[in-house]
Amino acid sequence: MSALQLSHLCHRYNGNIAVEDVTFSLAPGARLAIVGPSGCGKTTLMRLIAGFELPHTGTIVMDARTLVSASESVPAHLRNIGYLPQDGALFPHLSVAANIGFAMPGSTKANRRHIEELAERVSLPPTMLARWPHELSGGQQQRVALARALAQKPALMLLDEPFSALDTGLRANMRNAVVEVLNDAGVTAILVTHDQQEALSFATVLAVMGNGRLRQMGAPMDLYLRPDDEQIATFLGEAIFLDAQAQEGYATCALGKIPLCTAAASGQVRIMLRPEQLRIDPIESSALGARAQVVRRIPCGSQCRITLALAPPSSGSQFSATCLDVLVPEALAPVTGSRVTVHVLGRAHGMGSPGKRSPSSP
Image (cartoon, rainbow, N blue to C red; front, side, top):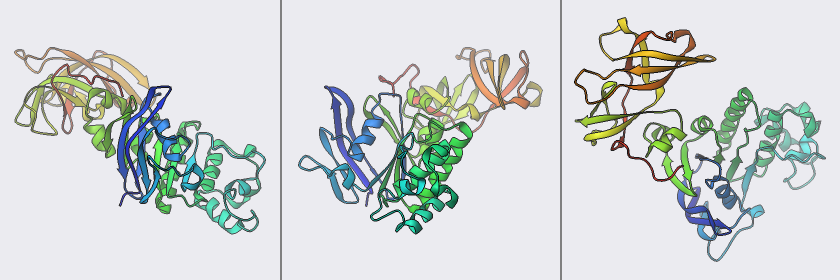
């Protein structure tokens, strides 16, 4: 049985498409991350599920209970859906304990034990329960907001970019804490985010939206390694695209002969590699691999971005010389002007014929 099922959901603002024919289902306990550029419809989709907006057409069913259809709509406060916004949205005039217990029947005092249990679940010490929201850090405020949302015992948790205001280190720690809490509680969750790395680390299911539609949906690493088109590929991370000649499960390109993810491709193809699939060695280290020269070197902290001028695999090759950017550990980065050997790790993903592009951006 699905925990959540959306069927042909559509919504417009003043005649402009915001969500168009969105259909998917989530298994109980799944964590869906929705990514896409600003204006792609992901926040509107979240608001439709929460009940803050009503769709023009389509249905929403949660745990076999119809929330939205052509003939009925359950109000937001009766949907048993938790909501965690960007800023936590704590009540400034209430203590931490009162914020957590806001939706509980009865007084804060009567619910003290349950409030303490929720605080412990989100790693807030009991001493913080008497504090006021303005006395908390951003991460602590988000933990309080999460505890308050869990107090409703929701069947579904919606997270609307809840980590965007946090600094990098705290953001990762908070995300990991939320995943652990959701797993322990067995709550199905949907995260909307602009951060591709955040989506990949949070999700058990990943969806990319564009122009109000679902462009691709599936297991995070499936989308990362086998995107449907180049625009989805680049939206989920840095990618290297090369023209190649495919035959019998291999692609021959400027990097040499590379195994493909699928043997179905044949003839001229466009292939994709992720930068981490390339290993750079001194040219003397191996007779195998593609030859290249470092033409630019840009330090990026612990990593270094180097630009390689790649030579064709042979003098008679149909593939012209090309340049590509690669990230390598700073300590191992070759100097500008040095010659290196490029080795490809794993398999390339065939993207279709050379020059093929998706007609619309994600």
